[in-house]
Image 1 (cartoon, rainbow, N blue to C red):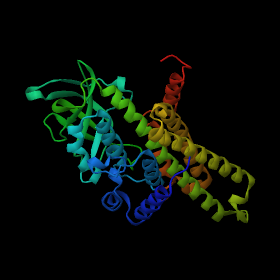
Image 2 (image 1 turned 45 degrees about the vertical axis):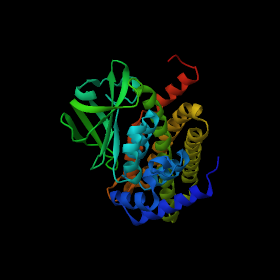
Image 3 (image 1 turned 90 degrees about the horizontal axis):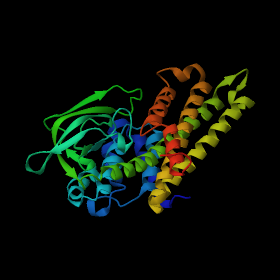
Image 4 (image 1 turned 180 degrees about the horizontal axis):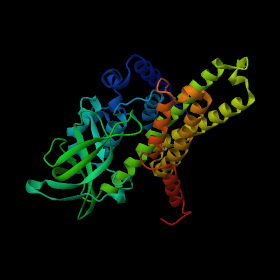
Length: 357
């Protein structure tokens, strides 16, 4: 599995821009100069027409810099849900702005800490003039200061469905929540009879969410790989510079073994994440299994390497002045996002027929 020359050029361009523009300030330049917001959006809707491998490259770089940008919530979850819904009217109306980066979207989906489509309990009932009235509470919604497109999963008489709700609609209330990982904002959305518009086919939401979960896990796995790789780079550099007992600590055999183990974890995770990206582009039927593998392997690898980073840095690794604690917090937050490693291993076992669904 190899990336193309164009994808490696994309990596270089993104890394260069992220070096010049830190934090939230990078969204405008990335969207305007490189077109990252529309990487996986078809050209007919104003996007670049790329695929999951392009998203993989970008997410690795965003993870490497612990970027707070809304790409995952807007370009992967929201755009992915719109495309999977098959609703051409909604896609034509909403995707151009998302692809341009001039609007940002989010998908309100999880309830009670679960991203399983069947865990959706929010309800939607028919309202006036062909609208729907949505009621329920959504947690772990990826947030951004200005949300322009809000998609909400809710149950109707036909089953789980997807609705577009105006973020400022009467009955829709957003509550920012405090997260351990301050680089990834989340919110709780409370809906009380908020007016919504059906996206796609009534009752088809479970299929859409299942597909979007796989795309999100593949993208998040790439981010975890990028962040884990950066943890390893920083730790190797520190081990070469930090002198103890008259020699760099990286020259001690025990430290060498720890760094070698971390390298194996990072490269194994990279293979798993790339496998999910290739499956999304070339073999969609294999994506559910590949995504479950990637999320499980990459979550555990990132957590382990981030933990080693703190231990091998010693006291400085737990200070606010060093980035080690930020990577450690991102590792644990990302490990739970869209489901834990254990959950995805169980999902994989069920897919393979090893356990009952």
